[in-house]
Length: 156
Image (cartoon, rainbow, N blue to C red):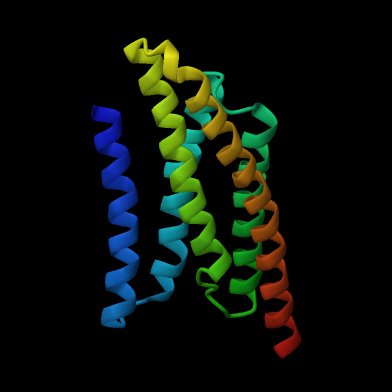
């Protein structure tokens, strides 16, 4: 229950934080940097836990990790050009996909812990599909952020 509570607080607070910042016009350059970093740390933590537990394939975790490192690098390059790169639409979609995959991974943990063997197959299957979607989303969003950076460079 504690894991579900922490997961819910993390995902809901991330959503509400972004919503409030946009509605009140309080989006800041530091927020554009800090918020994605905090999101990455949180999501990479639960995906790492799923990998260690044998729920998420290691190659997929590495794909997600390298995507986050790549986007961080692109943001640093943009900062060097004087631009604090905010979240792209693809990044917001990625957050949604990752949250669902995180919930599916946590459901696998719950089913295992509760000894609900009859649900293990379907729940594992759903988690596997969502993890694959995570991988595809990671690749797509990395390409999208690289393209956004190219647009920044083209303006100079």
